[in-house]
Image (cartoon, rainbow, N blue to C red; front, side, top):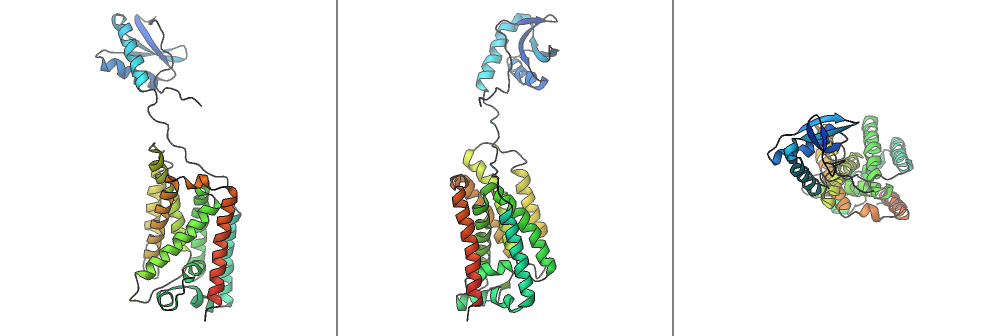
Length: 311
């Protein structure tokens, strides 16, 4: 759709007369008329704005009308595409099924934990098991385990909310695969930072903050790609909100794993910036999204198979 000049609506070829002054432009709003009036002021002359036939007339003194009309035309041509139109962030039409399925899986695993308490020992992130037994699968299985019902409910809310909104930007495949991958990376980072100590953790909160990082970082990456402004609703609010939520939900005293939350958010943030900047989300077809989603579920299934059958 062709863009409309933000300055002028109608500039008459020959200035009209209104209340003893010359009309050099008609505008749909008073603001547009005053914006055009900046050209008149820059030429060192005064101007007046009056309502006129459902528009607003920009008027100047008769003696300078022709000269000032030309100044407005020049100003209009120079600012024809200013301000630039803000980027409208793409939001995909996605199914709720993957979000519901992930939440249902967390509930199911929690129920199994009640019947098989050994699952905690088999699946939680453990620096000792990772470094001495190469139990890499724990980086994934740990994000499906929870300490108690309060722990589970909080993470169910977070992962459903942020996982869904991340998928609105990236698609279900890219959204959920990145949430899980960034959470696993966060767990790996914590393990490597605790090589000389015993480090144990469990819970989907790392994936929650990975998804929050994705939601926060996508508008930033879109800005880096286009260089065009993004509305506050799409960029400032998510970014500030993400940092506030990280501080509010991601901090606390033991046993809250603050470092895991922080790393999950950081990896999600930079992952989304990269994906949006390279516009990868636009290249992945619906079939590709399904494949990525399937791979994510396959990884979770295989890692639990390895955990249960580990000797």
